Length: 395
Image (cartoon, rainbow, N blue to C red):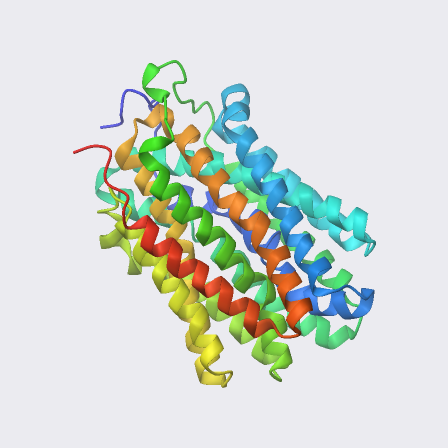
């Protein structure tokens, strides 16, 4: 039975509803954030950017994401979950259009900020709605939460299937064509999402149990912060790393799509583990495996090793976020979910802010991406260790 903290809603087709709901994160994260790695090499070459400048664009995107995460819960209280998801998605589509319009640093940075803000808003509201749908179907709860987080993987698969070949076909300086294509795809995806969002769905916001103190979950927040700083370096610079190792369009596409395929199967792969995610151990294991995936690419740049790296990384990195939503659902009442998801998203966002620009600066200073990527893998390892110390808040 649904919790009394959640307004009854006839989720007759919960799996279909959550899969379409995942389009919000496919647009905001899979294409809005992660596809930047695919065009970064061409933008850096065509526009004369340093690695620090290129990395700062994902830092700015992360600042926007943090702003969106902070705004997510207050906006939900005003608009409700469905309208907030719609707003975040609309912002994401518009930002992709603006990414195609200019290569000037300041305007493009503004578009990246707006893209991040829309993704943060949609993530907080979408995660809360997915958790609420899962609450109405306890037997499917872990799967339903996981399906929501296949959205970024779907966006990664789409962008990886499109961007490298457009860049190859149109040549140097065609980064704007990629952004235009992704904007068009995002607009098409936004239509079924808008038509499928449940109407009249509300969550209680007056219950005193919505309090969510930080101290009991400090290990969780610290681990998620380090994860945010570590994983984003891989997702920002690995296509450049693959290209520098001699990988052409097909190799870049295959690498990126394998990340997405790994992410897409992760809800099924890790469902039993996520279903026992009351403590920080599930997230610790996922962060650790993400670090293993990152380190494999540093051992060898052979096609086989890069393929294994991409798949292992993809299968684990999205599962980390699934674990955080499950942690909130297990340890807090439903009315507190938007606030808790926002808090952990803020910790994650702070890590993402520091990661890309720091890794870019290290690369500029040392002249090789491998040094910086080793540091990011070390951050992931430390994040896994710290997360393991988080204990359940409820017996």
